[in-house]
Image (cartoon, rainbow, N blue to C red; front, side, top):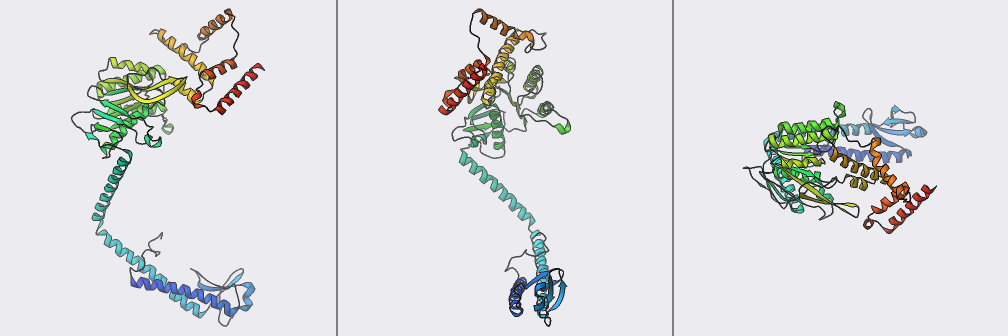
Length: 464
């Protein structure tokens, strides 16, 4: 019950007196049902009923249409309603007293039994708490054992004389479960005394964040006593794990996404020790390119020179990969990807050295951005790379969108006219681009037919 004073706490067979009261209550209710049937028969009133409420107790209710059939020599009016009259009889009053007395005494007795039980249990609180703690620990160990056996986890080894990390065939315990069996690509992590920082480059969606998090999760799982998702794991004892992952703002307190990023980065720089693990994912994205790159570079150098923690630092600032030439404890690694028939294929394998590019436009193509956007982005990217290689130390920004930046396009157009080549419309260019970037292996015949029909419609619209 909602309240301990309402009864219904103690089950049958615990207390004999309580059972007697309940029997009286149950028999009383049977008697009331029997009385209702008998009175209907005696009076001939088929709608007569025996009821109860807390204010008036038990009563016999007769509708107004049947009032003339009521035997007033036996019935005494008790309450008048809009469409009925309620009566009482001496016999009903007697049983009412018996039933209500039994119910009241039953409720009081139940509460007394509950209080005695509560006082008795209080004597055993230390033992019960100890038992609960042991059962909770046993539950955790059983869970760890079951998960380890079902998912082929290994027993980690710990060492305290250094901070070396050696994980062979490490996996992300959550991501591998949502993928098809055997689809997850395991990766190794080897960070000895000569390697404190992994600078990780590679395309978006290639698995940089997953790789970083799997290392941290393996460390956490090991230190709470669980086997870990790897072929083998030789780990130090970390005192803290700091993460700067994802993008989130705190508008209520007036903090932008970049400010939140800097605050979280500051926590790591201020409080990390040589026994800590630090995960930084894309530091510097929320501000101007040069600002972000400068901050990211300075943070990497500070972690290397001042902190000495084990660091996994993912970035798209490829300029930072040159830091391996000046920082003794930094090593470049990248998540592999390849381009085949114009389609980006993620290898999800961590390899030594820096990535050759970020494949950002390829990822945008996978997202389905319009071909005009992709083509224009490719042109701007080439112009940006060309300008970047020619900029002097006094340049403030890249001349990417000004009128002069179209000179190359104008020269190309003039050259086309000199060669008397036929002019190609924008729609035709779009169709050619789509065909050149089309990967037929992942298309059904029906999809290809639909694409051809769309190209025809685009060319017809252009002619109009």
